[in-house]
Length: 216
Ligand SMILES: C[S@@+](CC[C@H](N)C(=O)[O-])C[C@H]1O[C@@H](n2cnc3c(N)ncnc32)[C@H](O)[C@@H]1O
Image (cartoon, rainbow, N blue to C red; front, side):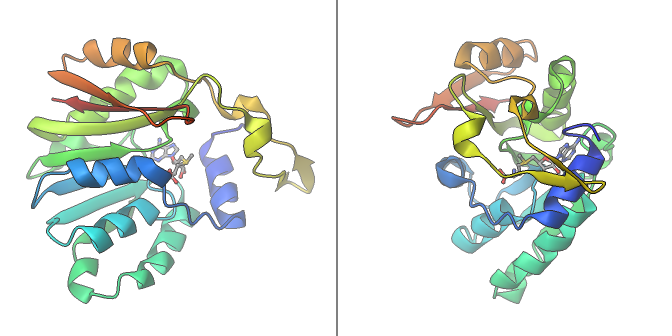
């Protein structure tokens, strides 16, 4: 089984409960999203970003969150019981979808904001431009893409997720889990190739996350 394949994500989400609140990156995104926004969340995992957003920003019009793994979306639906207000649940669309085959031209109305947290490093570098293009395309002019990557000093050994049992065999994760770790400059160089208007980076002392917001 290839690390980062669809099968890999299916197994990981089926095996691990992953109730991450996507840490402080999500805190920044939630402050930046304009009022009454329509939001798209790419690689939403088990739904925690969407849930956090709807719980803290009741003005949000709708959230379209998708992930390639059925097992993730199944758990995301379960985790949604945290959304007690039924009206808020109605704002959330959780779907199984692959960013690379998703037909982003079909949306009747463009999104104001797109969130992609901890996805980019799991896609092969030669696909990054296409991935970013596909995340920018469904945004309206002036809409924003909020994107994170792991930084250069991120150490898998210190962030160990434990072995994965696959076909009866225990496989230890290795740094192969990420195709690349990012510097701000590298992410900037990719984003400007897509003609974005403006890129803002966010930093937290002691953290090596690379966090950018790009305006279409
Ligand atoms: C490291 S996880 C991050 C999950 C979540 N954003 C978070 O920060 O907790 C990467 C996620 O991307 C999903 N994913 C991988 N390739 C994808 C693709 N082509 N389209 C949509 N989702 C994908 C995986 O299933 C996984 O849930």
